[in-house]
Length: 456
Image 1: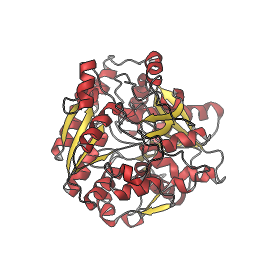
Image 2 (image 1 turned 90 degrees about the vertical axis):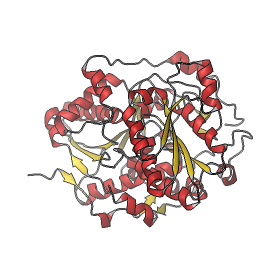
Image 3 (image 1 turned 45 degrees about the horizontal axis):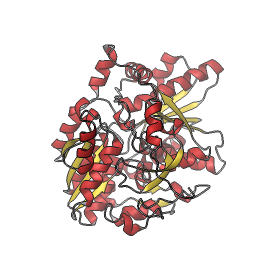
């Protein structure tokens, strides 16, 4: 019988994270100060982040050591398993070989602890007692709650309102680990109160929740802010997954992907998987490798947004990032994939997309749940609504292999389980779920408020 799963021994786990900035064909555009429009300095970011994370943000060192304290906590769930999806292949009657790296076995049920634990560690090392953050579907909030628990740090989470009400068990997870979670927009910050005055029924957005968390942070000397995606150091920490996967595929599975697929909201999950592979494409060893970023059609940042400098938050408190954006004022429709409802995208992913090294696709939520159900009924895993977007494209690419009679290796970045997202599955199975059209008029309105950056 052919082998169905591949796993590393704890002693073979990566001891370093991989930094793509060492190998980019062109350097990333600079991050700009929101007040002056000039490149930010480490001192500008010091009120928000510990200095070691700031140094990782701008580092061009190829490999960065994973602290032993972080490795010790990683080992409570890592390394994670690489699976061969034989049952899905059989159901699709495809010659494609489908692999998926499953990150749902972490205590928080997703990939997010890979950076949550690291960020909590560096904050603890700098003497920080309290942190603030935002969360969409709650995966990041629950992961950072766990990370802060390990290091004895107080945490306050601003959770996008629609997800706060759709996914109460995520809030309960946070509270179980000791964090405080409030719905965003909240009455706890000026940014939240201003939005509630404008729209009392506002479903919230990641950009707004970021504004609240940043405002809370800068108002206190004992507090730092933490972001679960988008930033360079977050993507760096996630590369432990891609490094594990690369080692497993080449040394145990005797395979190398022709296509890699993952979902993107801010981009950390998928970038963590593909960055150790895109290096091969940059250096010409695998020029035909396809790297497909999948986002919701209701929030099509990479597929329909312009490449421009924009704020990472609604209130304009964050530095300006060069990224594909729908406008920082954009409030996306209340789709169930709350973790993918962000107006911007990781600058690294945007840069690679602009250079033609990765591609993007947008999918409607009905089709993604159909794919998630098929995955559950073949492989047995009930996936997060976010992950279902990547499963949809994985299935479509496998069926394309069937049509063309080609046997390709497809690698799926499976970001986590959907055990606390069952309300979404109930809506789908009962026929209550619907697709949301791309709100072009709202995007045009938001894009009209893009910051004006001379020369950018």
